[in-house]
Length: 102
Image (cartoon, rainbow, N blue to C red):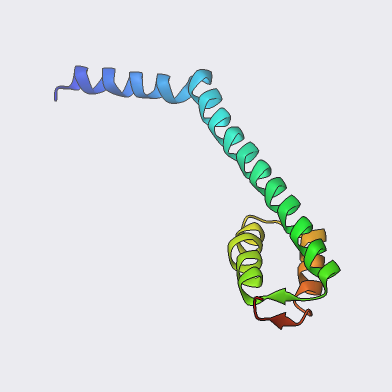
């Protein structure tokens, strides 16, 4: 690659990296990811609160129900940064007796 071609390549690269359009695109991609994460957290929170309320009202939980709630909803929710009401309710569900399905 000759010097002129290298200079032109560097100029184009700097122009692309410095353009506001590129940074706006990157920012939009991250914003969309944040919005999706917020939506997933909201849906997870809603489902966890609903199920915990039902199990607490019932007074017991089956192993399969607990596994579904804890392993497949609560743990991913917590890993995404969820906490608060769902965490408090999950602590209450942890105290419920675990029964066999009828």
